[in-house]
Image (tube, rainbow, N blue to C red; front, side):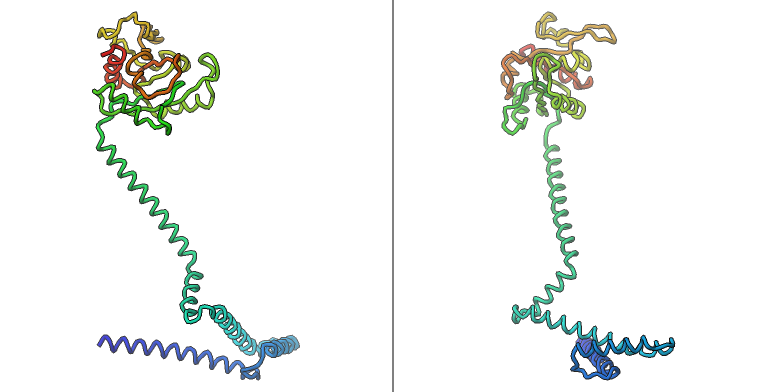
Length: 323
């Protein structure tokens, strides 16, 4: 039953198309007859007959007489549209003749890309965007999985001053590993190296571009521990903003009179506080893959909250006390 229906539907479609072509041919024949022209007349003769029709229309005085040849104009339009279409098809066939027996296929593909070129371009762009976005999402997911597999972060350490990492690409992975190796109690740290060179002598002789970058990095990264040189410490403002490290003296790890200690008076409480320790000559610094001048000091302080301070105190004791 379904096969019969399919054949029947196909026959009806073929008959419909055939009738459509017959109707066009019949209509074209009637147009020629109405204008008194033969079907093989030249386009030049058609144009002459059309000019004559226009002259006759302009010579009519009454509206009724003007509208009389309207069907003639419709006949002309139909003939000219049909001729234009035929000429286009003939030109197209001549252009596609170079493809030989594949001309039909070539015509279909050209028509497809002509009609759907914009759709294809948009689709290709959409695919590229989706691929890039998908890759970014995949990388992000993989990165999150990697972070989830790592031990908890023990501390964020910022190096700020006239020194830099030895890694040629500026990466800090080796620096992180060296810190963990020197203090095995920690399993994971994140270090950040901010280069702040001086252009002359004194604390006020920094390059403005580097100073701006340092301020942005300090505000954005919120390090728990900061390691800086003497000039940078003075630029930041001495003990302002640093945590009190007096606990390393109270524990007996370091003597109060140790020249490495940086003491200052808290302007609010008036109490003397320890805000930094010079660790330049420590074994810890000697083991770090950091480039610095021989006369450049490295001073450690704590900027974080009390929780970070509680973790940092044993770390600083280990470095300064030689434990």
